[in-house]
Length: 138
Image (cartoon, rainbow, N blue to C red; front, side, top):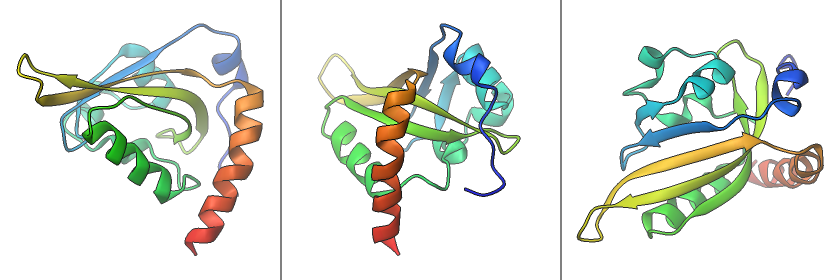
């Protein structure tokens, strides 16, 4: 997307980090770890209680998130490469895994997400697919 730049690749590709967040069943953030806050540029107070899609990059196809919700609401794990938007308008790519968390009776309680820096190969392969998906949304 024109005018939006990636965050410093040194922060993404040369560090070991994991972004962790937890949401309620509607996708509102309950928890975001320190690295999630650092990378996204948001404070804890700006994130908690707000929809997780505050970091959704406009390049991301809607169909991916429809599939994500179908998958996690059915109690299955969802995996994808995702482009996220920082508070300052820059972006970053992650390999994401969302785990549905269930109570002792097997009922969905909330969702836990863990993400790490995506490889250049994953980014290159995914970018074209998402571009085509976005194009078909028009």
